[in-house]
Structures are given as structure tokens and as C-alpha cells.
Image 1: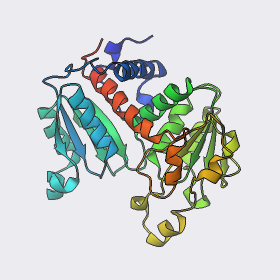
Image 2: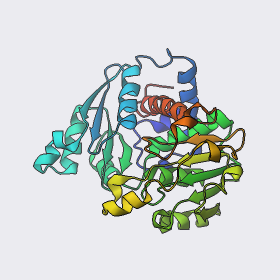
Image 3: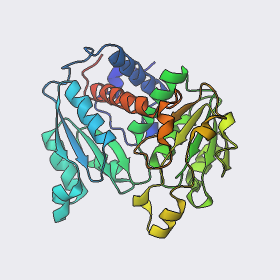
Amino acid sequence: MPNIENLKNRSLVEPEDFSLDEMGILFSIAEKIEKDDKYLRDSCRGKLLASLFFEPSTRTRLSFEAAMLRLGGNCLGFADSGSSSASKGESLADTIRMAASYTDAIVMRNPKEGAALLASRYSHVPVINAGDGGHHHPTQTLTDLLTIKRLLGKIDNLTVGFCGDLKFGRTVHSLAKALARYEKIKLIFISPEELVLPDYLKSHLKKQNIAFEERESLDKSMSELDVLYMTRVQRERFFNEDDYIRLKDTYVLNSEKMSSGKENLIVLHPLPRVNEIAVEIDSDKRAAYFKQAKFGMYIRMALLSAILGVVN
């Protein structure tokens, strides 16, 4: 079993950067925080987190900032690239060098794939990837795994369905790769032909001997699922507005569809939602996406406390 000290000063660029045991340590810390709001309070007093968001965000940015503030630390940064020197042509490497000289850790979202990896190479403080284009979103993955563990009591031996934008959805890509490390996992990918999972991820799953299927019908898949991971069709990833309009309402989860789901099914969504989950589902006990958002703050508190070395 790895020691918590092994996580100190570590960057998190993609889900596989931490072992299953190391993620287990973070889940345990998060569960302690959930049960006792005094646990780790003020442990990050005097620490600074750079919050660099080159792309819009609500939950991820606010949950990181809330996490740092609840730990007693402080945050500085920007919420869009227009308010940074990137708008003047400053390189990402220089922005990172600057932020690292002022702070103890950096959390960054950037629309370019690979930006987080580049940032980690120019920073002498830990870098946390809060989303890089269509690639990865590892702290959302930690959030998703913690939610599954807390609500279903396990992460292995599950059938998980992903529905919606599987081509551009970085949360889907990250979670699928992470689930491939657990035992007896089956994945069902539900999307229109234009938004199927990228080939490189399908190749990865085949190498890991993960059972998966690609389908177009959500209705015919509902009864098999332990977890349904809904995603929005992301307007910002489309080059053609007509294609977005044609595909955006392909799947809408409503009460009729939910009626064929298992009694202990949990419905997740990285949020924000648009039309893909009807508001009527919010009152269904199987709807877990707002709980999921709360778990996101707990796991980010756990992650920050671990990489900053304030927990033992």
C-alpha cells in the first residue's frame, strides 16, 4: 500500500498518473472530509493555488476554489484567457513559469489538447489538469469514481453506459480509461454515428480486455445499466453550427426512459446539462448528478491536501 507521502508534489495530468491504491487513499481522505467538516480545516493556511482557466468553467473552477478556501488556503488567477496576458500573446510556458513563482500549486483548464502536460514540464510546483480540450479531465474522473463508490459501494463488477457526445467528451474519455483498470467492468457507448468514441480509446480498451459495445439506442440499453453517464452535445467543439443543431437533442432522458432502469441505477452527469436530462428526473432518487458535484469538492480537497503535503 503506497504512503500518502508519495503523492506530495505530484502533478495530475491524466487519470493514469495515480495508481488505484493512490486513488484509494484520496477516496478515504474525501470520505473523512465528508463525515467531519473540521477534518483538515486550515491545513493549507499560508498556501496559494493558481487557478488558470483559459476556457469557461463553473463547477470545476468554483469547486477547486471552494476546496482551497475550506482548507484554509487562498486562490489567485483568472476565469478566462481574455483577462490574462495570453490575450497579448504570452506563451503558455511563460504564463506557467510566472504562476509557479507565486504559488504552491496550479490548476489549469485549457482548450488545447496536451496543454496540461506542457504546463507540468515548465512548472516546479504541482500542476492539476482541469480539462485540456477533448483529452482528459482527471479530477472529474476522481469525482465520478468517488460518487460511484459512495452510492453503489464498489467500482468493480459494474455495467456503465455513456450516452451523448462520446467523440469530444473529455469526461467520458477520462472515466472510460479509469474504469478499464477495475475488475469485471462492461462499458456500453451510446451515441449517434457522428459522435462515437475515438478509435484510440477503443484500441486502449481492447488492449485492456475490457468488454464494450457501441449502440445508438438508449431505450434498449437502460435495463442493463448500473450507472448511466449522460453528457451534453458540446456546442463549443463543433465547427459547423448546423451539425450541432441536428445532433444536440438526440438523447433526452425522461421519466419514460427511466422506468425501465434498475432500482439501484445511478444517473451521473458532469454538468452543465442543456436538454439531455429532463428536469422531472431531478426528483428521482436515482438522479445523482448534484450529489456528484458535491463529491467533486471533497475529492479536490483531498487531492490538494495530498499534493501539498498537509495530510498524513
